[in-house]
Length: 135
Image (cartoon, rainbow, N blue to C red; front, side):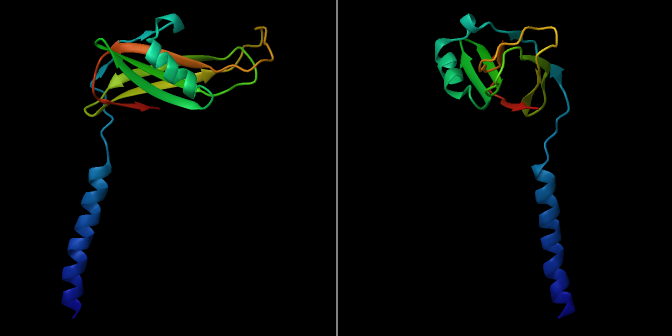
């Protein structure tokens, strides 16, 4: 009877271990992706409509148009002006494009207005069909 349990337990352990290994993704950088930060007036109208719809919450959007990929990252509603966003990294791995951004608060010397703002950044790069992952 003991041997029976060993024969059942061994395949189960192998199955669990291989399932865990299959879920891991390799984030090893292949190359940096060249990108441009896009001014609001240069964002395609359809994509701008999506941004307007989602700007009040955490926003992570992408949009393909004419050989380019536009990616937007927003941080939701803020109660004052003066926020900005930096793009810290944008690189390609085997499976995806990884983009890292940071929200920067108002600077002390900056004049702050007490009005709601919706900080976001839009970048433009060569089109790819790889999945976009935000860090």
